[in-house]
Image (tube, rainbow, N blue to C red; front, top):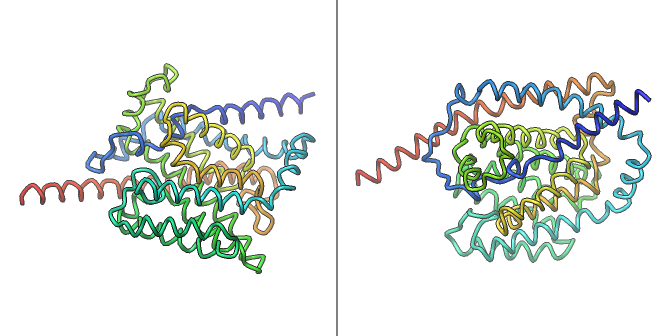
Length: 356
């Protein structure tokens, strides 16, 4: 009886995480009047009491989710659902080819590079995307398409800068996934799942940091859609949404509750379409494909997920909680520093142009 109550409490915690507000998933740059000429929030101002409290709450929640994951593996209906997905894992590559192909064609048609508002200035880049989409029609040419996706990402770094393109780091994982998909070496082919988890998780984590360092961009969206705040203080709500996104990205990186999290995120992404429209569909098509791959593939078979490095339950709890704080500190400090450099460079460029 005690175990049943404890499991229901832990499952309720997971459901709360799944029922996140839609604004937590909005890619701010697609819907806000953003500019790198906007001053980033200094780190000493970003780390508020609310920030510390939410970091502590996330620390506790992540440890609890390890217990949820451990208990779920023993539940009959969850095991049956897992087997149903695993029986269809051979379709994962096809889903990724279709998702990437649609993304490339939509970008080609809109004269953008891989995602909304990454506007291209050279027509040959658009036709390159069209050609790569054609390569995805055939399994034998899929690795070449993977190289093409990596090339497109490199073009994005050259045109928009590495700092901006880290939002779209997931395309590196997609490129690697497609590149090694036909390898006869099981160890090489097995790299595609860890690469996809890490890159998608990192992208979610990175845009979560954006909501903290550039709060004015997120606040602009909430001012246009006040119903999203659920009546909460706008700035607190934005910080909470950022931590939800940070937590979800981190869960994908460490491979904890990969199937439930993938299902929750893809369902919420579909719901955000009601608020943000076609741009949301275009921008998140490739993420939907990756999340469907996670549903089918699970943690993968060749390389263990980081969370499974430790066998003892208490070590996995400590791993999930402590490493979140370490990763947060490891990324938010350079993010804040580079954002300030970006702001100063933009200001200097504007001043130089004005003087001319």
